[in-house]
Image (cartoon, rainbow, N blue to C red; front, side, top):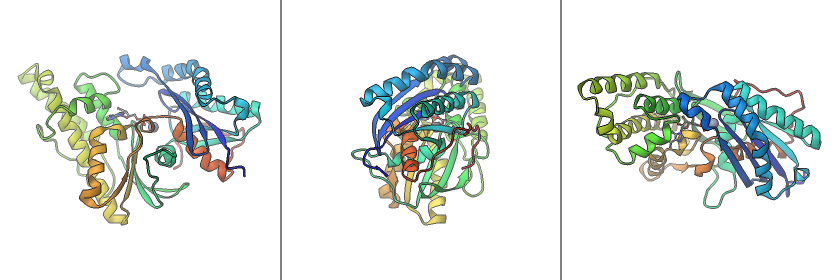
Length: 340
Ligand code: KG4
Ligand code: ZN
């Protein structure tokens, strides 16, 4: 296996970002993302519009990724793409494109699980970023998932805890919507929270056994809290936006940290990696960093551009699969839900 010079084009189109990246082994040469702004006005991702926007974006995004990498498509060794989980109409665009290109160039096709990719993004070779050693615990927090995963090897992972209802990203986005903030609200809550007092308002943690999570009750709690206060003072939100956001972010951090502490005590594993869009949150990143000295953990916090959906993370899984010659034939299909 000519592992010295493997060039992989990776494509990610599972939700509302059209992304392409080129990797040289485990190094990222280019990482291009086209965000779809069309969804903002609807307060959430509209699947039909996402699929249409992917069709418009995919060729320019892949062209840009190749150009930035300084590579011609004929130099590629394999095409990796997101097989799932995600929105079917969105996945189909990336899958069909990847299949066609692999056929045209006569190079291997590699199907990648999006959730594996959020975790394995930590294996991208980046200056100043350590790679975790197996086994480690991964907290994957995104708009669609909230999981604690025991990662024994590149392709040996076990979900030991997950949400029973909403994902943590939904908790951020739905809270933001209640506050009248546009979609996606997570980054805006983060921004306001930096200026607010996290102890201004006390929300209660849901009681969920074991390592599982629940966020739908928190959303309802926040809704009633806001309705109650706005009925007394119509300007309650505007006057207290920073404190409200800081308090919402704090309760979410507390919920996540409680479960991580439990997972560490149950498994004895103290290497913790976070991944997924919500791992961009500055409060979560700071709390996890602080856990190194507080609890003696070794924590892995991804480079900002590898937190929200991107194709570099698909590429690094593609590279590991390439080394193991885990290729797919052209009959491979997209999967909205996929076995972990
Ligand atoms: O991983 P991702 O890009 O897409 C999914 O696979 O879902 O995650 C998107 C989620 C959204 O819910 C968004 O609000 C949230 O990540 N997010 C954040 C932040 N940046 C993105 N949530 C809190 N704080 C942030 N800074
Ligand atoms: Zn994601």
